Amino acid sequence: MKTSGFRKQTAQEIKEKQDKTTARRIASLKAKQASRVIKPKAKKKPAKRTTGPKKRKSRTERQQLETKIWEECKRIIRSRYGDKCYTCSAEGLEGSNQHTGHGKPKGALPLQFKYDIRNLRVQCYNDNINLGGASDIFIAKLEQEEEGLAFLKEACRQTEGGWIIKKENGLVGKEATLFLRELLEQYKGIT
Image 1 (cartoon, rainbow, N blue to C red):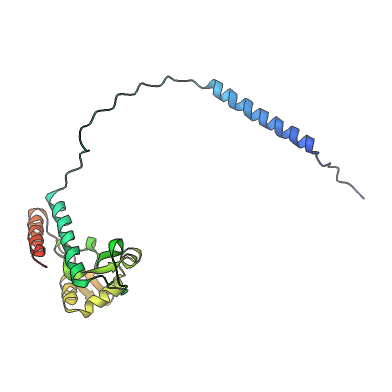
Image 2 (cartoon, rainbow, N blue to C red):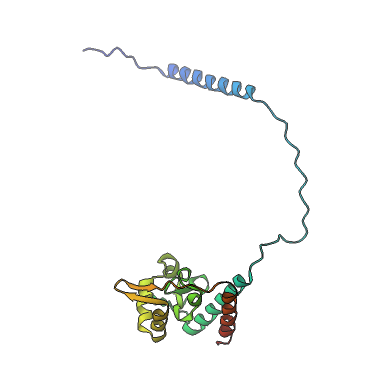
């Protein structure tokens, strides 16, 4: 029988080889550490003393109005439609599982339709967040309602592919602020 000419290393030879490798690594690290230039630490400036809470960026009147209108929209929709999900019919929604969803996305709509309560319904977290509003089901149900269909006809145009949002020049500047003020007053009057 022919042998290959290689012999198997003993445990002692393997340990010696590992010890040599470890010793080289340690020597290399010590050399790197010795060659480093140690810079003195810069003195820290004393912290500025603040009084009171941090200042927040001030929100514009329009942003404040939009926040207040959204709170009114949620109040109206939840009092009107209760705690049942519009798209999946889950019942008993409350807390963080009870959302106010849009049939057509708020960000794509012109200002005059962003807070239109005909486009808002109660939805569960799963449908509104995880399923992106379940818009196909939402729109199909809106089409079956008189006020929902009226909203779709005003804000969108119907094509073979579905309802496409009309690209209108939205309200800007003072006109937008006046519109939002009037809308807020109108929604506060709804019980």
